[in-house]
Image (cartoon, rainbow, N blue to C red; front, side, top):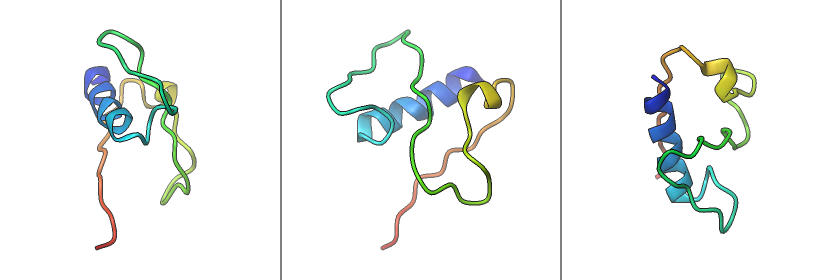
Amino acid sequence: MERVVAAALLVLGVLGAGAAAGQALRLGQAAPEIAGQPWINSGPLTLDGLRGRVALVEFWTYG
């Protein structure tokens, strides 16, 4: 499960939403904390809080 969350966060990092500007993500590196505002339907989430749980990451935008 951690790999799924890490993969989703890697996608966020590639898109620039999960990593700080200029920060490159590397294979085997710990995933960055989830960044973004506002949180809809929950309080802010952390990787430690999600450990061992199934997490669905949905990407969407207004079109």
